[in-house]
Image (cartoon, rainbow, N blue to C red; front, side, top):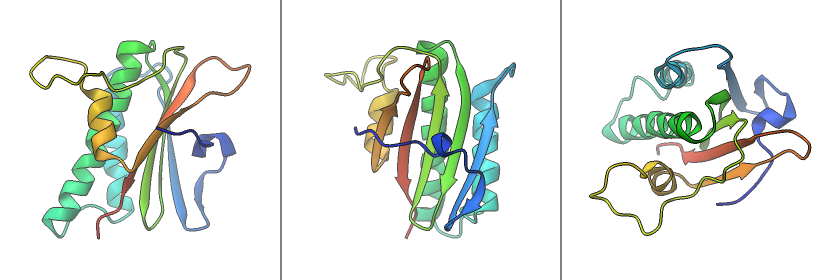
Length: 153
């Protein structure tokens, strides 16, 4: 896990420097996990990740959707729900960011016990992603949890 400046912190939107970025505001929304997955799926179609031409491409897209689900679910369970999501893509990496107002620090449960219900979200994120981290802005409540996944070959 590491920390870097999130896409959302820059205020950029659309496409710049080969990076395409989309933002979703959860303000007042219900069913935020399926909403986030649908939003991410639409972005993957727009960016050519879907429809997937190969099994590897399909698996990469499914990994992105699973990470979106896990990050948004964690915000629901541990941080009073998500405020927003940013998904960005360049030729090599997709980055997912979920912001919330929570004070907790996400971390994979250790030791990880595969047979027990619950507690697998950040373990899944850690296993599927190139890197992930948490960014906090001084003087602002909450955090942004981000995760980066590699593009299929």
